[in-house]
Length: 429
Image (cartoon, rainbow, N blue to C red; front, top):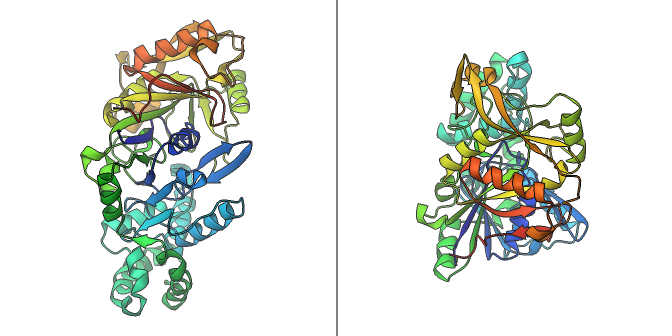
């Protein structure tokens, strides 16, 4: 049996949570390999809604869930999320949750710096979640991070705190803020350490063992490819690599372990926060799609920007991430429209582009070229076979496949786990 890597192929919020939950029920392990608690996944199971930010989606179904070393971990957010999910009747123990002992920690000083920068940026705001993700990744690559394993050695942490505070105290001074309260930070770390350490382990070792035993591993990406720090709409991106290749480095397994790459794609396009969005709709149709699709961020509650399906961006994402097949979600949101449109290219300074240019000013100036198709008035909600879909919805899906040069492996027709049309099983070689 193959492993499966799930990534978002747009700007995130594509409905990964439902698809990962559906796949997790058939997997032996689910692994988060990048991002932090800025990623929001909503699962709806038997009418019950679970909102996850840091925990892998497999935790709800009792599947072994692993937070890999590529994640930046807010230990207090982890504690609160575990308590919240346990309050919904889910059992979480060191048997079904493992945290990489080499995960960098998100500290209160990271949240402080995130907020200070966004406030000072004015019109140049990137639109972060304010949860300290970016500053934590900066400290990771700057080799001054406090990691999960350090929680077991707090009595000898002073040299690391010297290095960390030398950096942050200078930044805080620039914002007119007092130095880091080291004693308070150490006390907070001592308080949270026992909770985190009961889940901590070298997860690469555990994953190697379960893989050798023939386990099916599901790698769960956060955010979307268009927010990748290298390949996304820079600088309006996240602070980690969101492409499928990160599953290898962010989990401790090699690149031959990632298996089938499933790109999650919404049947239209949405984006949270600032940055270019060529197909954005600021009219009644955009309002309709946003309302019907309940387009509000899982983590922030921010209203998402909405637009027509952008085949140029999805084709680019699929190529960069080596997507094997896509899962098309929220097709039911398009029900009832007389016409639907797909972006097939951009017009920029008199030239036609079949890709999104790298420069931010060029991205912002791209004008979409649309292909229009007849819509459908029949309902697709809850359909569980291809034959249940209206003819024009099938034509729409087929045209998307052609334009993005990647097959559709499954179609999601509602937030419920079982409302899924399977064309190809990602777990079968």
